[in-house]
Image (cartoon, rainbow, N blue to C red; front, side, top):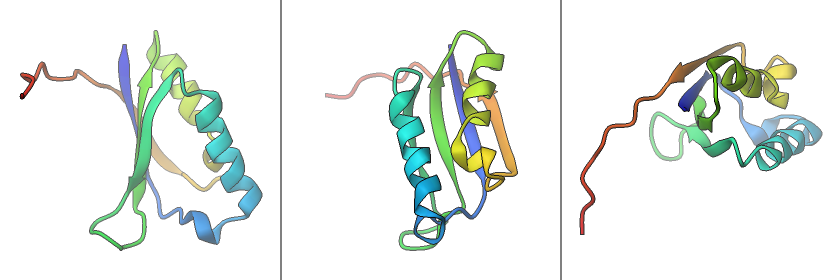
Length: 96
């Protein structure tokens, strides 16, 4: 089952303790079998981050939530507002 984790924050990796940022990226790498895509969100190119999104493959909402909860940024209190939602991907036609 697919889930989306939406993080609403102003985490700027270059302004955070480098050890926490390394732990965050290590966490993503360690869970690449479940967190299949991830990236920061900006309101416009070059502007500061305003959050991020993850695509998660998990059997249950509880498993997906646990992955988001385990993010070192969340554990450090840097992501106080986030949600994990079921994602029903649309069957878009393939373009050639």
